[in-house]
Image: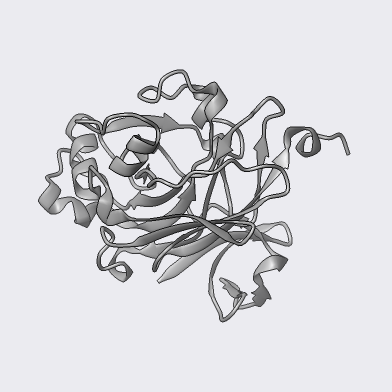
Length: 254
């Protein structure tokens, strides 16, 4: 099952697909998807992000693949929904997308083995975790200005139930900028798979329902500029549309 969170007429609703470009609200009303404001399909409680979790991406950035997961946290201010705008800072010279499979935790997890990890997954969604490379001090320790900027992580549009994604470690990831494919990879190429990430995180802290793990991106980065439409798509999970806006225009007084 696929579900989304949307705002319509001043209220937040759960929505499900209802045909091409149509959604059905929890009230039963059917609307065009452009008639609503899309919210992240979950409200992330604690959000974890992986650095360099694909060997080809590490090579692309001239780094060796890590020997243990490189995990950092993201604040709730970073997340926006499907069809939202992401701000490009005025001083940025290189801001790139990162198409990532996001794993949503479904129940409390503490000291979970990788063999049992799947039982703790609620479902999956698509993340686009933008990075402003200008601010990067060290690829192994991304600072706050790289990965915790307002609007920098579109999430959605759908939360897809775990059982509807039979093999999350064999999904194609693709990114399109203004209709041109610029990135393609497979979750099969993760260095640390989903089960091992849940095992690692739960070994030293408790994971809770609503926690989200962003699992990294493959190679194929490109600079994005104001006016660009960026589509990140994961096979069987969803197609997330996002656009870039300049900092000046986004914060322009009305």
